Image 1 (cartoon, rainbow, N blue to C red):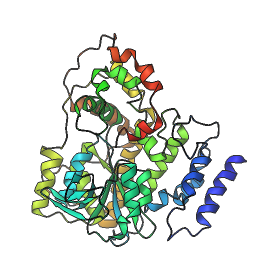
Image 2 (image 1 turned 45 degrees about the vertical axis):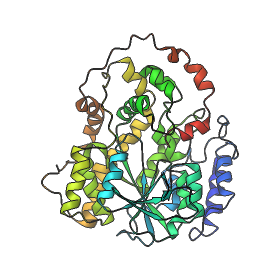
Image 3 (image 1 turned 90 degrees about the vertical axis):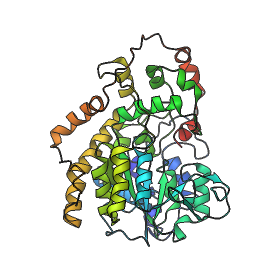
Length: 425
C-alpha cells in the first residue's frame, strides 16, 4: 500500500501540475530523493529500508513512471516527434567513458555540430558570465561544461537551450543531473554509445593508471592490481545502471528493480550506438537526426570510426577463465544485462523502426553492413567479443597484491558518495 501511495504521489504532483511548459520546481529533486529513502541534503548517507518507488511496478506502471518523471520527461521518446526539429529538440549525448565517447565527439565535429565542452582558455572559458560559441581548429564548441555540478548549474542558470545555437549538442557524462538544463519546450533527444561492460571496466583500469591529465586522476590506482582495483571504490559497480537511475552512492546497492528502470529508460528514450559497430551506428544516427553526410564528412567519419579512434590506450586483456576477469565481471553483472538489452534494441527494434520510418540505410561501400544476429546469438557475441578484439597476453597476477591492495578496505571506508559522483566527470 505504501509503494502504491508513493507512485500516486509522483504522478499526481507531476502530471497534475501541467506536464509541459515548466521547469523543475525547487522542491521536486528533494521530493524524489526523499521518496527513495535518501536524505535530500547529503550524498553520504547509507541506503534506507524504504525501497525506490519503482521497485515493484508492473510494466505499464513503470512506463508511466518514466514518462511522468520530472527529469526523464525532459527527453523526447525515441520514436516520437520525428523528424528531428532543431527548434524544439536538442541532441543529448550521454558520454559513457571508455566506450568510444571521445571518438564520437570528434565524429560530431565531422558533422559540423557545436558541442558543449569544458574549457579554460581566455577566449572560451566555461566560467564566463555569458555563453558563446567558440570556433576551434577542430570544430565549434560552446563554453559550457555539462559534466560537472557547477557547470550544469551554470548552463541551467544561463538557459543554454534557449539561446538558439545552431547544431547544438549537449555532451555530458552525468546523464541524470544534466537533464535539468532541458525543458518541455526544448527536450533532449538522447543518444549513447554502448560497449561491453567488462571490456570497458578493464580499459578504465588501465586508463586510470596513466591519465594524469584527467581532473580526477588518482595516483594510487597505478599501484593496484586489477583484482585490487575491482574490489576498490574506484571501480564503481554497475556504473551505467547507476547513472541511469541516479544511484551513485557506492554504499547503496543497485537492484533488479534498478535494472528494470534502466531498461525502460533506454527503451523509451535512447538511440543506441555500439562501439563494435561504430561506423554503421554513426550512419544510422545521421539518418535519425537528418544530418547529411557528404564526401568530406564521410572521409572525416571514416578516419575516426575506422582508422584513428581517439584517446585509445592499448592494453592486455585477461583470459576469460582468469581471476582478474572474474573479479571485473562481478562488478558489472547488471550492466552486462543492460548491455545485452541495448544490443537487442539496436539490432532488433531500432533497426526495423529506422527502416520503416526513413527507408533503407544508405551506407558507402567502405562501411560494412552489420546484420542483426538472432536473439540466441547475442549472448554468444557478448561473451566472445572481448578476446576477439585484443589477443595480447596479460601478465599473471600472483595473487599477493601490491601494498595498495592491502589497504583497499581503508581506502574504501573513506570513499564518499560525492567522490563516486565525480569519478567520471
